[in-house]
Image (tube, rainbow, N blue to C red; front, side, top):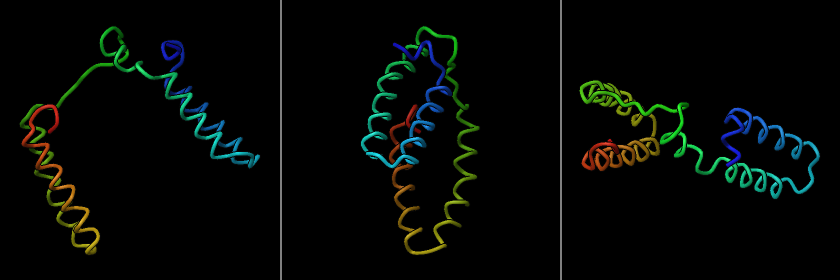
Length: 111
């Protein structure tokens, strides 16, 4: 794939500049943005998996269970404070908590 020759930073910058040009010219903006996004996705498609298996650019890391547990516990106060902002915020936080509970039950690597 072409992704092995281009950095992710270059691809992101290319997408951004192309979208800016399209916005300033105002010609078929949405179609052009969609095309650029789809073309860029095709260019990098499969690149991450290949790098994980064969490359030296990516390294899979994870937090130890005790550290991850501490992160989760510390975040509960934040979510509780956030849920007090408004009824809508409470609904969103409740949805996040339900999702987190499901992922916790699913175990590693979903937790």
